[in-house]
Amino acid sequence: MTDYRCIVDHIYTPENYLARVRRVVDRLDMSGPNGDLSRARFKRDIIEFFQISWAMIVRQPEHRRPYLSLLSYCIRHNPHALNAALIMYALFVHLGPFSRYVVGEIDAQIAAVESGEWQRPVLEAAQ
Image (cartoon, rainbow, N blue to C red; front, side, top):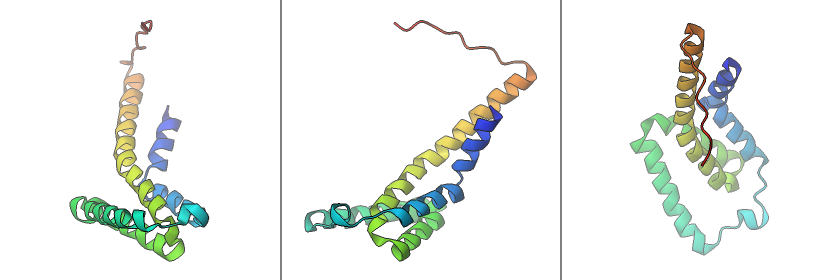
């Protein structure tokens, strides 16, 4: 269980998660239909970009530095992958805190096992 805890704790640190997103940005081929920006989508994409940016920079200042760092990296290395990068960052906004919760629950279970307080859960038949 401690191995699983270490893995979850390690892969969802902001630095490690963003390093993986940067590797994806470097490898994404957004030529062809995937990178095509039609006028119909462009206006909506611009509005969503500013909404996300406002949320990450102003309303959630703890995300300001990593968000701007990823944004800058993406613009310099593969601007066509910006939409995908922002989606992956939005996932991190949810997965990061959830991973901290999971690590806390694992820590509590490990402590219960080590103190002898842990009891096997009662299994009930599905209905």
